[in-house]
Image (cartoon, rainbow over all chains, first blue to last red):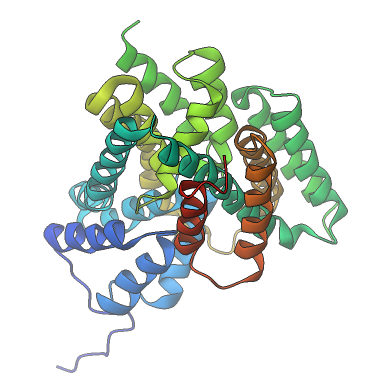
Length: 186
Length: 174
């Protein structure tokens, strides 16, 4: 009997492996978890090949919800079903939730101290800037496509200027955009 | 209504609307938390958002932090669970069949249609946060300088956030 060489890594992580892998991703992921997720999943543990990871990430970015949260579910369930998905999710979230609550408690204690209060005014301004920069990067592929830019501007006006409730605006925007871009596809 | 149920209802709804991740639903989260339920002021919401950026993990830690602020540890667990459950169930159902439709045309059409909506949502989030956080000209200066650094340098984001906080602490901002 001859064995054919595996085309995918011979990964067979246990529920515990999945928990520890995502625990590392959660703890290390300062300023963005995706590079760490790739490092653990593809390079260190070799659970997925690079194209498999890209494909899974594409799905998780397409679906609603946090991208990395969706990765925990898609990857965990692929290897170990629902227990695997739960292990990945809990592994990812346990440390960050504990740390952010700790930060919140510290903030509460010292929020009235002038230097701390000023530090938070500046931190909030910089955190808003971080979101401006990522919005710019996400919008960059739309340039040169007037219809796509038009949809993005309509979405912006509906939410930021008119302050429409998202539950009402989202279905209209998503369906309208899909039909419009499909009808006038190039 | 029990406050934990209210938190679960608000964040459960946000889950399936978050096309483009948590940052896409920041305006709706703020509208619900500040304007509809009056759990905190817009300034406080912006502070919690900033604080969440200083924690490791997914970029939705503001969800846990708001839950904690409104209803303690249980609040944090409820908001985190509520924001994750609906989208996770959807991912669980879809990830099995998704690969079968790898080259299906409708998949590409849907992806192309949602992309500009996600971009618009995240731009709206950024605009609302800037509107709340720019309390004076020094904060505006921090936002402008930091935006430039995030966009045009390869400095680690945490380094830029830490530098801003330090500038505030020594009295240059605020």
